[in-house]
Image (cartoon, rainbow, N blue to C red; front, top):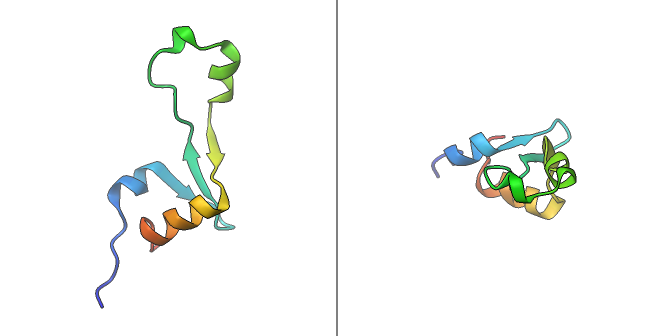
Length: 66
């Protein structure tokens, strides 16, 4: 059976931590900041850890080689 290729879009969007968790960038900060509260904008900074079940699917189907 041939090797599974890593999805190139997933390479750019997700990062796997040393313990196997998946980090992702927060959505919702591309445009329309004027209508959001300062608290919303502040809380959307940085990265978040994905829920385990979702992260496992990302690793299995999109990032098989880590």
